[in-house]
Length: 287
Image 1 (spheres, rainbow, N blue to C red):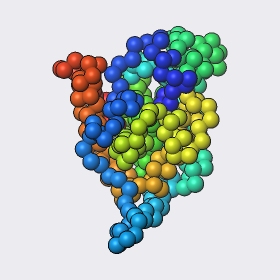
Image 2 (image 1 turned 120 degrees about the horizontal axis):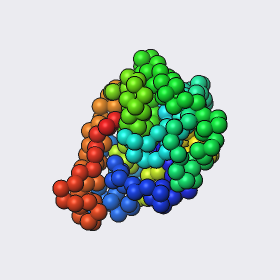
Image 3 (image 1 turned 120 degrees about the vertical axis):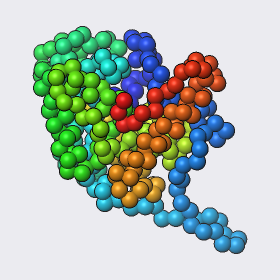
Image 4 (image 1 turned 45 degrees about the vertical axis):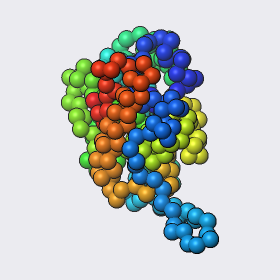
């Protein structure tokens, strides 16, 4: 549930939204309020009377030649209480082509609110008629993700704490063993804010995909979102110099997410959106 369709107001109209891990407020990411320095693209040395010449862009790291992708569409935005409606787990090749694709439609066992249906298009009636038992779907999604992690394949999830945390609570609800520590995970939302922290504008998947020239047709379809997020991760890797391994990148994202949440907490307190004692949860990639 990583992009927004048609917009954020649709979700807010049907359920009060908890404080997000990230904010799309343009002013927050201005140079005067940005967090501490983080990696930036490299440029070649500049000689006398010569304009700066960008260094060659990094090639796609070998460990991103096979990348897993994961996305959920759900009944809402509460990771503890909302349910899976659709899910996608797949694998992309080095050119972003789909190598493996697994999609599910679940009967969540509860009514799907109209606001959620407006976002992803799945009605309660359709889920009940065509969806499979939620416990079976959750078990199969977990099994697919475990197989990717066991093979050392990094899994891309846009705003990873949402999807992995909701999946964890679904597993516990159905008596299944959750993925307690998913790794290695790549979160293009965290990476984009770390490597291009001064860029103004929203950071929804739709906006970020467009920025990196990744086509996203059918936002808020689990497969479309998952595939687009994977291609954004590959685009980021071709624009910025990522660490040498997915495990190193995973460890760095833990710190970046924490720093970004701390800065967002300060900003929310300053504008009165958050009580001075409040804290934006910066745990990553699962809460």
